Amino acid sequence: MRWIQLRWPLPADRAQRAVLMMHESFHRLAEQLPILRAASVANSHLDAPDGRYYLQLEWRALAAALRATTEAERRAAIGDALAFRQARRSRFPDSAAEEDGLELNEGLAEYTGVVVGLRDLAARVDAALRDLAHGAEVPSFVRSFAYATGPALGLLLDRYAPGWRARIAQLASLSDALAAAVDAPRPDPDGAAASYGGTALRAAEDARAAERDAAVRRYRARLVDGPVATLRFFHMHIAFNPDTVQPIGAPGSVYPTLRVVDDWGVLEVTGGALIKADWSAVVIPAPASAPAGIATGDGWTLHLAPGWRLEPDERPDDLRLAGCSRAAPGGSAPATSACPTAAP
Image 1 (cartoon, rainbow, N blue to C red):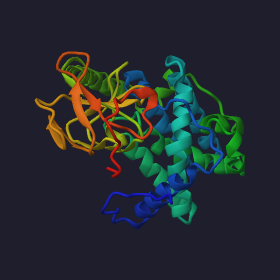
Image 2: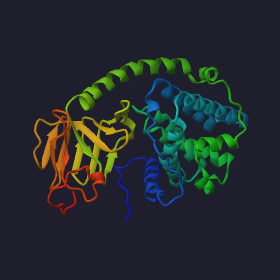
Image 3: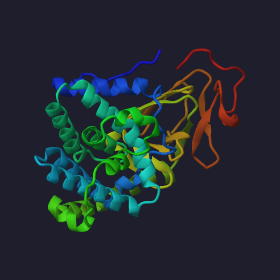
Image 4: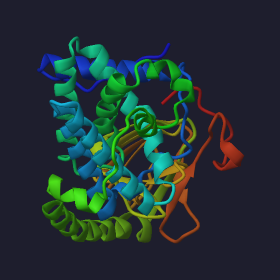
């Protein structure tokens, strides 16, 4: 049986509640749908100043397209949005595939929530505008941007490419589909930026970049350079806030809050943990000691399942898991004499 989990309490606003419930219901069924899956949806470029700058300009242009009262205004705004997207992607290799991949996941889910959860077009447009406005307010765009772009792109596709959902198996990019459907002029993006508050936005992003660099240095000292405990994934289930993910380069991304359930037990994080770039493990600051059962450290609590423990790793003061997984990949977890039968 497949099921969904929602954070309680649900939104008091009826429209927001309906969108949320239909969004999550989409995820329950998504694996049964012929939707293309991307190899990576890391989107770490959306934490860089240029990535954030052109993404927010795109959001503002998409909002203008949804609000437009004439066909000429709408097409011009769509052209601006696509120009900002092209400018962003030209600066970051592989960004197109990663962005398209998350939009075909969370973007389609949020679009589905808007369309299924709300009955009339005006309410759907209001919800899409609310998503675009909220997108700019969250601390990190890396895992959250598609919640904002998905409904806007989907509603515009409904207008200009009716029946696009029936072709979802062949659809690799929502924005490419919109570009193919709309004959919209593509302006010079840096010239068009002035119409969307580009000067003030650039200054704000430059200031944020300085703060972000300081935060990355702190995270690297805590989760890369200092003593750490590495918990390898086997049959991982994970819950996190997509609005707060912080990439720190080659090691991966930091998740300020996190809950992981795996063969080895349950990890609760309130002070930041590193998910490796290849999604093979979660890394936390090493504790002073490594008891069996419940282990605690700086901003985390680990409930170890029977048969699992933390043991010294190769680097001095580092720790790693040791125990027995029902399907340990490549023998990476040393087996104990018998696997525990109780699930964590």
